[in-house]
Image (cartoon, rainbow over all chains, first blue to last red; front, top):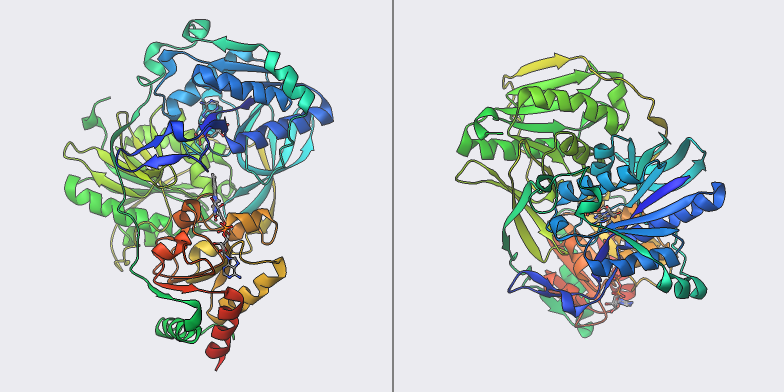
Length: 269
Length: 325
Ligand SMILES: Cc1cc2nc3c(=O)[nH]c(=O)nc-3n(C[C@H](O)[C@H](O)[C@H](O)COP(=O)(O)OP(=O)(O)OC[C@H]3O[C@@H](n4cnc5c(N)ncnc54)[C@H](O)[C@@H]3O)c2cc1C
Ligand SMILES: Nc1ncnc2c1ncn2[C@@H]1O[C@H](COP(=O)(O)O)[C@@H](O)[C@H]1O
C-alpha cells in the first residue's frame, strides 16, 4: 500500500511563551516539534505497513527547518520525506495549504491512503485533512479512533462523529484524519535515529510542480481568509473568595449555599 | 466574484434522527442580529427525512428553509452531504454560510469550502458585520491567548461556529416562512460505507448544568466515585483534565479543555486541577467556578469565584454530607 502521511512542524505549545502585548508567540522561547497528532498519523501508517506491506511517504509543507521533522518521521518509520518549501508557498491559509499538498500528492500518484492528524496545535482548524481530500476528489473519514480491518482496496475504521462512534469502510484511494486515541506512537530506535540523520530529504519548490499550480492559487495570494486584526481577550480573572485550609467549615458552608441558591440539590441523593 | 451577486445568510441545520442540533438555533439567532445591519434573507438548510418538523427553524428566524429529503441523510456521510449541498449553494449564492462546529460540521464544512474553492474559518466564537458588509469571523488562537479577526475575500464567506457561544433565541410561535423541498441529486454511496453505529457517547458533558471535575489531584481512578457522588447529588456529571484521561481514569468523553469539551455549566467544581491554559480554555466561561486545590498558587484560583486551599478528599465528603441533610 502506498501511504502518504501529512506532517507539520509546530512550536512546542507546552513550553512556548506568549507575548500578550504584541499578540504573537515568542518563537524563540521554545523549540519546534512534529505536531503531536501527526505522530499518531505516522504510527497508523507504520502499523498498516506491518500488516500488509507498503511504502510510507512523509509529506510536509513548511520552511527549510522542517526537514528536521521529516528526518524524525523517517526515524519513526517513514521510508522517505518530501518537503514542499518555497517563498511562494508562505502565508498559506488552510485552503492554500491543502491545495498545495493535494497537487504534490497528485504528483506522487499512484497512492492508496493519505493520513493526516486530526488537527494542528498551532493552526487548530482540523480543516486541512478534509480540504485536501476534496482537492484530490477522494473520500475521507475524520476523527478516526481505531483501525479495525485493512485490505488492499479498503479499510474499516471507527470514528467519532455525531454524538457517538460509527464504524465506516473507506474505499481507497481515500484519506483519514486520526485522533490521539488511535495508538501510542512508538519512540524511534537509536539506530533508526542515527541513520535518519543521513537521510536525504527531497525538496520540492514551486518550479518542481508549476504545471499543477499557478502563483494565484498558492501561498498568501491563494489564501481567501485573511487576518485583519488581532485582539487580546481581557484576562479572565474573577474576584473570588478564597478560603484557607483552616477555614474548612466556612468554605463548605459557602459551597453549600451556592448549591442551594442554584437549586442544584434536586438530583438523586 | 462581486459581492452584489451574493446575498443572504445560510445556516446549515444539522439533524440526527430528525432532531435539529441546538447550535442551529443559536446560529439563526446570530444571523438575525447580523441581518439587522445588512438586511438579508436568513435561510436554513436541512438534509433529512421527509417527515421532519421544520417549523422550529422558522420560529427561530429562518425566512426560508431548504429541505433536501431522504433517509440517506440519517447517516453521517460527509461526502453525500457535500455533493447535495454544493449545487444548492451554487444556485442560491448566499453571501454567508454558517455551520455548527460539531464533529460532523468540522468534517463537512472543509469539504464544501474546498469544493467551492472558497475560504473557511474554523471554530469561531463571534461574528460581526463590517462597514463594507463583509463578515468578520472571530476565533481564538494559540490556546485562546489571542482573538483573530478574519475576513474572507471569496464567496460564500464560510465559518464553523462553536456550540454554546450564542444564546438561542426564544421561538416566535406561529412565525411564517417558506419551505423549499428538493430531492437529493446524488445518492451514490459506494465510496464510504457506514457500517454501524457503535455507541452513543456516555456523557453529554457539553450540556451539563453542573460539572464536578477532577485532575491529577485525584489519586486513583476509583476516587472519581466520590466526585460522581457529588455530581449525582447536584444533578450533574463528572469531568476531568487531560492528564487523568490520558492515565485512563475516565473515557475521553469526560475531558474538559482545549482538546476536549468546552463547557459552560451553571456550576463547575474543579478538584485537584492546577488550571493550565488548556484546561481553562474549556471551562472559564462557566457561570460559577469553585476550585479546590492544596497549592495556594495554583492558577485555577485566578478564575474561581470560590477558592478553597485544601484537600478535596476532605472538602467534598463534608459538602455531600451537608447537602444530604
Ligand atoms: C495541545 C495541548 C492540548 C491540551 N488539552 C488539554 C485539555 O483539553 N484539557 C486539559 O485539562 N488539559 C489539556 N492539556 C494539558 C494541560 O496543559 C495540563 O497538563 C493539564 O490540564 C494538567 O492537568 P491537572 O491540572 O489535572 O494536573 P496538574 O497540573 O498536575 O495539577 C494537579 C493539581 O492538583 C493539586 N492537588 C494534588 N492533590 C490534591 C488534593 N488532595 N486536593 C486538592 N488538590 C490537590 C495540585 O496542587 C495541582 O495543582 C493540553 C496540553 C497541550 C499541549
Ligand atoms: N503545512 C502542512 N504540511 C503538511 N501537513 C499539514 C500542514 N498543515 C496541516 N497539515 C496536516 O493537516 C492536519 C490538520 O491541520 P489543521 O487543519 O491545521 O488543524 C495536520 O494534523 C497535518 O496532518
